[in-house]
Image (cartoon, rainbow, N blue to C red; front, side):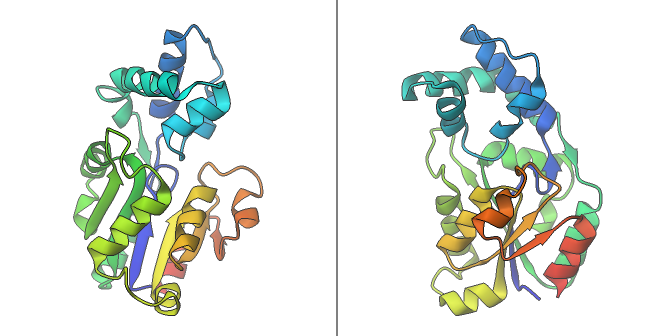
Length: 221
């Protein structure tokens, strides 16, 4: 059993594809870029937005910052709740919580949006710690988010051996596995999110699960 369980949000606990892709589409339109196929914008789900605008559309850092501001014009009032919770997640969190395990959210999404989504789906009560980025881009990498979550849980100074045994980072993208590796956690990948084919395996996930039920079984041991 993992005494401490850290969870990514997008693509792990919830399916945010509608809100994120439509808000990216809105931001691109501002720059004269039309992308009618929302499927092509799904790679924006998971990594920091600034990195994605720069990588996928060649934006400069200044353009990417402006794109994020335009993105939030739509995301904040509308897109944040164009979201669905994966079937079985509330029940799994309840079981882990009742079992006495400490749960945390470790997301690259701004903390205000993270809390709003957790409250919207009624799962905020299961988490001992909730960590996200700041609107100004502070704590924007998964490694920084994981470090803060471990610090708030009071286990940052545990040995790598103790963390590997007792603490898991659960996520759907390579960034989550990178965050787990950076601090010696067990990296658990979920294939029902937005990872590309082979992404989680290539990044070296310790465990990969295909369903929420299988994830619950692994976390409960």
